[in-house]
Length: 254
Image (cartoon, rainbow, N blue to C red; front, top):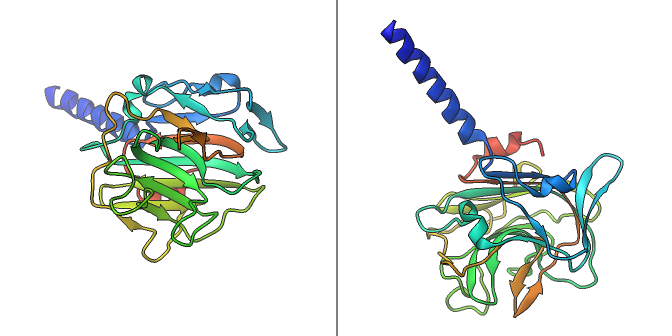
């Protein structure tokens, strides 16, 4: 009887561990106003910064609609589990998006913790990172210093994919960091690009401290103001507290 109980408890513990490991840390399904609160291991509420963020639905998809100048945020103190840094530097961010053209060309922010103004950069999922002869691709920005990469005017450490993201199409973009490589994905596949994706980065993510970056969606703080706006739709957003494998990302159904 004792052995049977031990087997049952062991089975339960293994099952729970497997479930927790596969569950996102935070997951937003933007189908109603209530979906501003994440599901998953933590329940964090995104706040609309202004009225340029609304909920809409097209023929197939309910989504968060972000007009130029709109964005959302969670104060840093309210989302400690999203503060990846130091020994806790491994993560994955995945988003289902529909990109629209904006009035000027600039990097396009999806989600993460990245404050350029106060040199509190940590990690961020971008599109259209205009560096290294790039534009329109999925990009995973990482920083170990908070400020510009030493020897450069800007932060330069990023995995940058090869495939341009077209306007008006629903796609799934992702970015992971496993402690050695940053990787950018498009529609479940590693969007390989020689020397840039995967991008070798053998550092720990910068610790922004108590006054570090908020978690933002759709924009970042840069040059003394909010900018790098994303314009379009975001239907789903997931954050994992580990680096998902290529196979796991391929199986995600966002």
